[in-house]
Length: 138
Image (cartoon, rainbow, N blue to C red; front, side, top):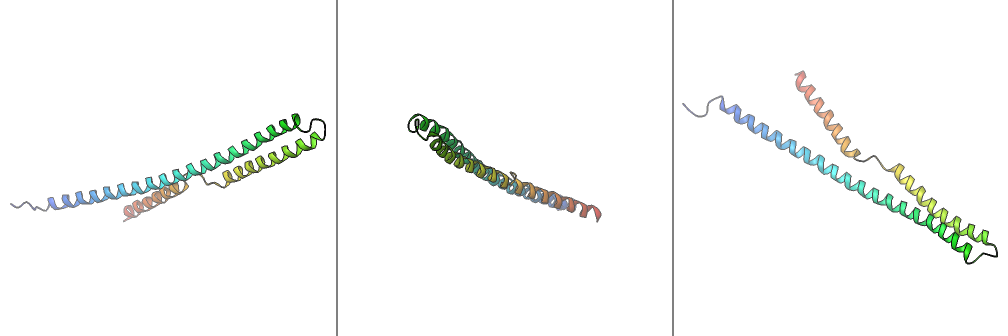
């Protein structure tokens, strides 16, 4: 009797097919995890920018209060204090308001996190559903 019987050939072929399928699945997962990691890094950068803009807005709004108080006490106590205080306060409020407006605009224009990853997974799901339908229909 020889070792190369007809029953052993398909088993080796099956093992190789399973190994290739496993390697493809691992590669598939690796690609998706890489994509998710890239999107996570992008979200981190967006969050940093939003934090910076919020900090600028808060800082200038605080300056508005500080400058208004200092002007009342030091310079314009007896003369045109209202006009000077109003001018400096309005300037800082405008700067802070512009920073808040920019922050809101940035938040509205920012896409949902992980949209590319979710889109790829949806395409994969549709492809797999189509593949299984095609193989079941044959």
